[in-house]
Length: 281
Image 1 (cartoon, rainbow, N blue to C red):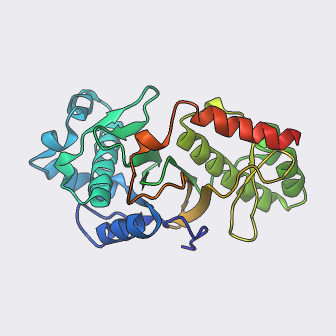
Image 2 (cartoon, helix red, strand yellow):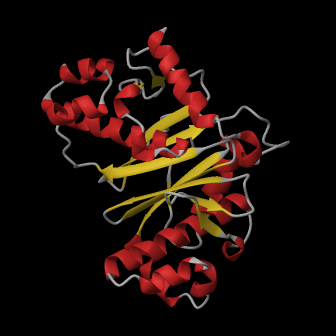
């Protein structure tokens, strides 16, 4: 996997509760302030179901787990929550049973009492991906690499004018790959903002398709940020794409890494105004 951004830690394969992936998470957090992992629920299923301390590990998620009747949904749920807890525990250097996972309105997970770490979770088919950050907000999204998104049908909903022009000049296969990359990047970015699909994807864009460096752009293709955001898209397991968006507040994490003190209620409004301002300039 190519490291698309020097400030992003590329995703590592989480193969079970223990393993070399924990060192990679710790190294990513120490060097870059962020880390991400991916796994499949099948890889963890036997471990999850045979874990004697499962109820304690799941905490308040235990009730939802027990009440979920569909087997596939149930197994994916338990593995995804264990993946979050083990990843956050590795990032913080504590035991997984000390992680108190809770949820904000809309379902975004957070670590109760550990505001210095932001966390994002995504899944598609059998893949589960988790991203954590100590520098600010983070978002992760994944899609099957072979998913066919029709450029002609989705360009107005997904692309800025600059992106439409760029993709329209490509062969159909590259258009499909390009719009899938944009979709996952925009999902990751809006998840980091806590907005999800409530934001209009055609109001912000991304460049750097060939260079490997990805920057946030206004609809006309001009830069819309000053380097505080890092973005990357990574192929994993030969059949999925994982995109990550990570914000760096610029504060020295050795002095203050609490997300709660770094961000305020006006954060999303500030970023949105920045985008519109760049568009009208």
